[in-house]
Every structure is written in C-alpha cells, then in structure tokens.
Length: 56
Image (cartoon, rainbow, N blue to C red; front, side):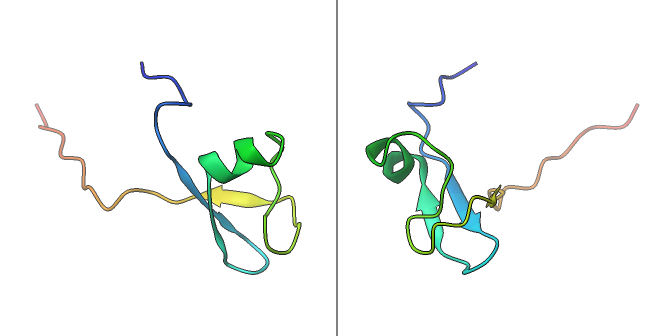
C-alpha cells in the first residue's frame, strides 16, 4: 500500500463545506481541523472513479 504522505487526499468540512487537503493539515500541525472555521469533523471526498467488479 502507499503511504498517506505521498497521496494528497482532500477532505470536506461538514459545517462550512471548505475543501482541506492533507498537505494543509500537516502544515497546521497534523491535527484534523478545518482551516477555515476550525470545526473538527471532516469527511473524505471519494474520487469520481467507478470500480467495476466482475461477477462470477
């Protein structure tokens, strides 16, 4: 698996809707906190790629 530091994940704040990247979080001390409003609940945004699984 890849390390979390090499992949730039994007989170969305539940309260204000701001997009926060892992790069911004590490610059602010590594805590999970919105950089705009300070709310501590973020959700990970899923990539727009659709996974296809072959049914057997």
